[in-house]
Image (cartoon, rainbow, N blue to C red):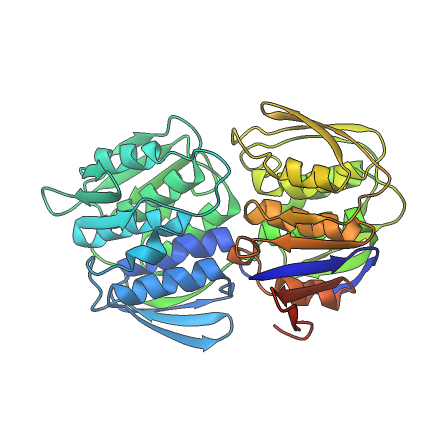
Length: 431
């Protein structure tokens, strides 16, 4: 089994190129099923989640051609809703977007219950509420099965009981080919929601208001082919920003939209980190010990929950007492037990974590509990004295393209080793 071996102590220096947004890509690929023809997707991150979704599309009869490392051409002309690779579906959270795209195009859907990272219950009741409002009948057991009695979804008003990124995107996908207008209220506003809307519009959809709390979708008869470029990944960029802050050094983070990083930039500056913004890059400089700070995660434009574990590691080595309040998920502190193995002083009470900063962490064997927690453990290992082994790295590779290679090019001492024989996989020049 592969794992990461990290020798801490090296500051980070150099440049890193950010890949396409994972959270946009995992919705755009299922949405491509709606297109009657070919679409080309550029700046697609090469991560295990996107690779799995492309294979699911192929199992549905789509033709997928990889043009280069970050570009694919998808032809769904002859695709159907039947024959899905259910084994892959049940391993990935974003497989639920196929419910929206199948219902929208075919009036019938069958998928597995979603998988992915396990950091608490993430219900799909708001997804179901939206599909019901559009005229679908949905049944949930081991599978999600749905059909539209009239054959075509109908536009409707949908008020989400809570702000949900997944439900907003899924309902938006389904509504594109529905008859009439759909209005989604209390919608999520994240950048990847805007990106999905822009993708759909570039293929002939009529989606308005993405990025606000009210999205209006005017249904069209069909989508046509086209070319679309995915936005840079806000969370990948934030992860390298947090790593540079915690470990120290100077890193130019390229291919970003600085506006998307405002909430992260503001918090790092509060902690004593220098962040300089340019047109499509940010320069992060960190020297000396970080200052304490309080962090509360919130829906966009608040501090993202997907950055909570990474900033948590930075606070673990900051001076003073910091407080983290998780405002989105109930159980996103599983990584704290792993961080304690490395000498961190953190106590958790419900959604609140109190972090007493320590001068240094020590190397240990830890698990990547989920995608972002795994990235946090890597940052902790790079901060620590001695050797850290990070296991369950498949979670990390769900969302970070060439993570090890990019870190090594910044001077980090991190390698992929294959247990039990200890064989190393050198990725310093990859990607």
